[in-house]
Amino acid sequence: MGTKNVKDVQRSMRIRNFLKKFILAVIIWVIAIFYFFPILYMFLSGFKTEAQAVTPAIFFKPTLVTYQKVLGDPTMHQYLRNSLFQVFFGTLISLCLGIPAAFALVFGRFKKRDSSGKYYLWFITTILLPPVAVLIPLFIWYQQFRLINTPYGLLAAYVGFHIPIVVWMVHSFFSDLPKEIFEAAEIDGCTKFQRMTRMAIPLARTGIISAGLLVAVFIWNEFFLGFNLTGNPTATLPVYMARFREQQGQFVAQLSASSTISVLPAIILGWMTQKALVKGLVAGAVKG
Image 1 (spheres, rainbow, N blue to C red):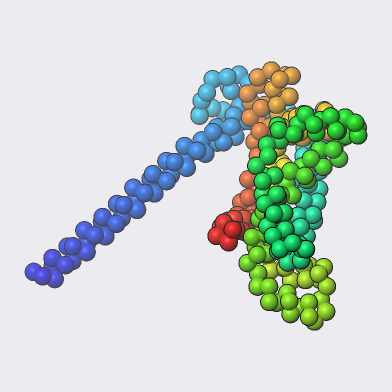
Image 2: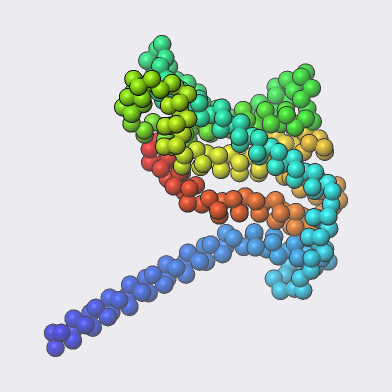
């Protein structure tokens, strides 16, 4: 009898644990579907005609007419090229300037002992500065130097706003590296540039990749600066979608198709590098 009671208790515990896991899985799936449903509906609306998109419906006869119209628009290609230009060079320049700045803050020597902390705090506080707070002086300054409606003017703004993010993330990884190995390398005659390129960057590559991915996604999705500092020839893809709706009317199907195309690169990039991104963000949060 005792053995039978033990088996019954174990079976009931297994059933209870299974039910808990099942209920938890159902709750997680419901929450995931709830948050993902707008993206799914946007994706499906791109396969509708404008007449079908007016009436919300999940089941419909799909068509590729809307995607063909959006992808065949030369204006779309121009805005897409502008976005790719800003993302590639904005991320590259931000990393090229932010990594040496973070390295100098961690391993550099300053005349005053607390100068490194003050400079790092200055970088951190600039992250909290919203673009709208500097739009008017930035616009006036850009007008004087004829940078309005130029890709390089927008690129300079993106680099200025995203270097602090690179410094913030990479600084935490550099701070975790043992300084003894850098001191030993200095004694052996290794220059600062060699210590940064051959030692610090390879050891902190996870954090650098995470910082680069974040900057790329931020620039790709940025709308405010792109809308106010550029014109039609130099505007980015988010600006294209906003002006597309204003100029041509509320064409839900075409807007959904263009929105799907604009979010696909970020989703694919995040999916391909999710391990490095999650590892870098979690490690940076713990170290910072």
